[in-house]
Image (tube, rainbow, N blue to C red):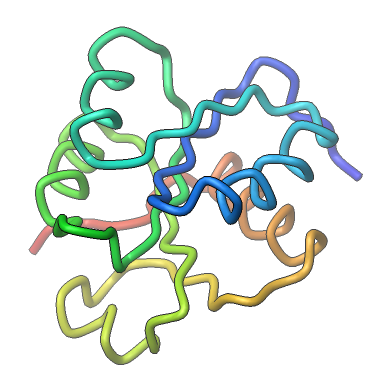
Length: 126
């Protein structure tokens, strides 16, 4: 397992239980993890923390991910959608996005996140 000491992953998930399930393997792999329960909290973290990559639930409760995706793209921060939404639904809004379908294993999550850390071009606005 590759350890990513020093990299900060931001998990944007409205369900804190799901966020903690995503957080645990990331912490074990050496990532620093911050959890945002809505886009406003994510924006606040982006203003004051060094975020290296993000994992976003596509179906944020009472919010749309478009503004957050725009901000991450503007700042050059790679991201992946961790979602129960279909790939087709995500691609309707974000054709070039990376998608990690829920449920997923810790190994699949870590492999996807390692890819973001190595090759950050997660989404290019068109």
